[in-house]
Image (tube, rainbow, N blue to C red):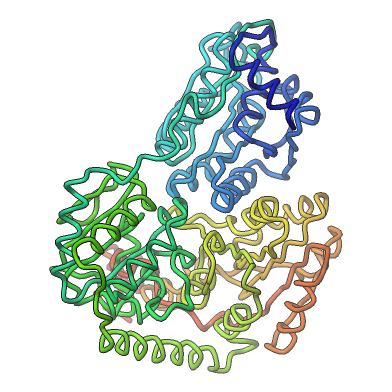
Length: 589
């Protein structure tokens, strides 16, 4: 180890003769990258050849979209930017959906995107694509390598921007720039980027403290930024000091420990009624590490819960997110951990101890108890063959505290928002507001690669499973005992619910005829189990958690027990003006 450190010090103080491929790989090593994802291609094969010797494991996927989801989950679990790579043209464009998803999720990521060689750009040659234009709106930046001598410098810039802007950055390099001879430094990350931004403006912190001291009914929303900044302990201390209910932002159920007496659960679609009823009449709202997204704060269960008159204190690392969706009384541009600690410190300086509000804590407990009972009651309604909520309840009861759960998008996957509870951070990896299907399973693989000792489980509908089941081969190949809980209701049920509510049960494109997913899994070398009742599901989960092989549990659930539409506010009852379609007009039903 000492020898390695000594060699690195030498590299930092003098230029070395290298090939561009070597400079790229050594920069990745300096960044601590030990794995990357993609499908091999001739465009970057010279670099690929170096990875085993450099100690970087290349994880080959079955579709490049999966590479992006795996890297997204890896980053959320480790805090380290994931790296993906593919063949120029189609290999890179296959990543569009997962990169867009990571961009909306504020996940740092490096997309190494080879392009056509400099001698052929513009000739519409084989696999040529202007990838920079394709990715322009779904990344935080594009860093174009303008000369082979700049490969390391540009890659450092890509990492700096990915961490600073919290999202994917496209590293765009002509395929002929991997070759040649250059002289350059290999720098430590501390030499070209800053890890933290501190607690922000001191005056803003003072203003936040004054508002919190004056508050009669404060509340907290803890988000992804609190998780990324390792700020959960300080958020808990703030909640305790204020006797404030602590909700978590949409699909970040690991942003506050669920077993704490002040935890009220998630807001947003299919979230917690306890959280929503705790928030609706607060006077000061402390939002820590959350952009308070429009979708994530919409009314749910007919509860218009987001407080209209509360004074909002918003802490965010990105200036673009402050007051972007809701007006704030105080905006704190800073690290969630540092800002939370500084607010707590100054609160205690003003008032060393704060009297515990027993009445409020009892109110929170009552709301939580009522909501927990409602969740169980809803799950116990009989289904044919099984109520999907019952399956979610059994999964939530079966998973150990260390488990990482990924959730897809869709009717059942989103209902999981109400049932999933976590005591530890970095355990809930959800598709979030880009809302693409096919996210959960490759993300579970990425999570397992990030934390091999933690069980990794994906909750996914049968529609989304059709977009991701090919990665079972990846899990088998990499010997990763990832568990897929496939909710098989024979339809795209989120959209089917719209056709139920708005189109008089006229189903177009909603139904899915799928195979026996357990048999398909077995044919791919995994364990496959098909269940249609709670008892068998319990047994299958227990066995899967002990297995050293990937397991696919094909869960047959009732396709008529559906959650409310995602965007009821965005749909309208159909009207038809042409006689040919008059019978479809809702006024003629």
